[in-house]
Amino acid sequence: MSIIEKALSKAGSDSLISQALEANSPEAEEIVEVDEEQDKLIAKINKAERESNLFKSFEENEASDDDDDDDNYFNPPKEKAKVKAKAPVKKRTQSIDTTSNQYVEIDWTRLEEMGFVSPGDINTQAIEEYRNLKRPLVENAFGLNSVGIPRGNLILVTSSVPEEGKTFTAINLALSIANERDKQVLLIDADVARPSVSKTLGIEYPIGLIDYLENDDIAYADIEVKTNMPGLTLITAGKLHKHSTELLSSNKMAAFAEELSNRYPDRIVIFDSPPLLAATQGDVLAKLVGQIVLVIEAERTLQSMVKASVDKLAACEVVLAVLNKTKMGLVDSYYGYGYGYGRYGHK
Image 1 (cartoon, rainbow, N blue to C red):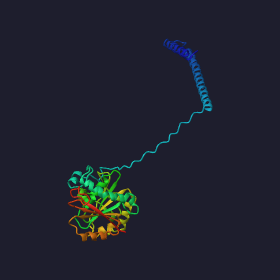
Image 2 (cartoon, rainbow, N blue to C red):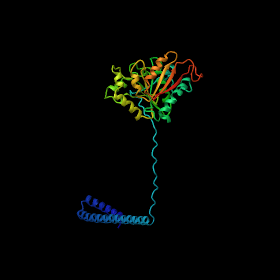
Image 3 (cartoon, rainbow, N blue to C red):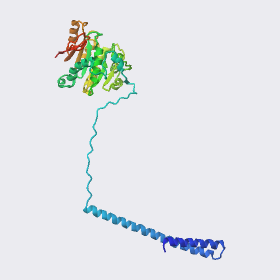
Image 4 (tube, rainbow, N blue to C red):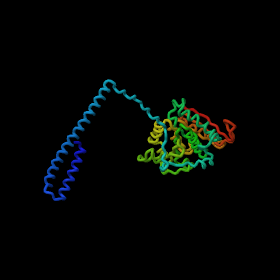
């Protein structure tokens, strides 16, 4: 008898029991006892069939595994070809947090109106002039000529007296170099007595170079300011200090300059320095850099002043002289007012 037939038989028995109970038949108790025995028998049969099916399934699985093992033994599976993952190509990127208080937006329209170069300029007079000026400086810093020039990537821009255009030259030089795709520039306002870089660029930042030199709790990362020109970062002069000359001539400043040169060998660092004949800080800073740009105002700066400034720079190996505010170009008359530069070597 199958499980279905037994179930139907049990259902029929349940129906008979119900009828006997409803009729109050004296045979009801006997029917119930017989039915209970039948239930026990059906339960045993069902259990035996479940165990039989389970055992059969187990044997089939074992046989399948044996077949697979035999197949693997005579026909071992081929190993999957190992593909060597390519190392990701690292690209030099600069992440700028524009929400940080150490990020500033330079107003390019305002600078253009003041005569400065800007990222959008193409083959303008100013662009061409500063291309000529920056080329020997960059070559001395990174080219074949850089061998033998200590701290060649540190450049000091100075003048003999105030108002000769040194800050104008320092900013334009920094913008011109930073505009190149593979160049990074750090512009430092080192004219701590009369800071002009921040004022010219319209930047306000509470701490700078002097704060870093005075306070050991201030780190370099605290004074570096990023701009909306990806290749350009700034350090302001910081607060006015009566001992600024001593701070600039300190061991910490010397170590700072050395770290800037060695830690970032692919970056140009430009210092806007005080005038050489107006303050002693320029002499101090000149000893820390590898190249110097001496700005000379045409038809105003006396030859004796220029000579005195050059004498102060005798310790520096490379000095470029820029004749600023000329009415006629000394290098090429194509420019309306032009400029010229020379090189003084000292050993």
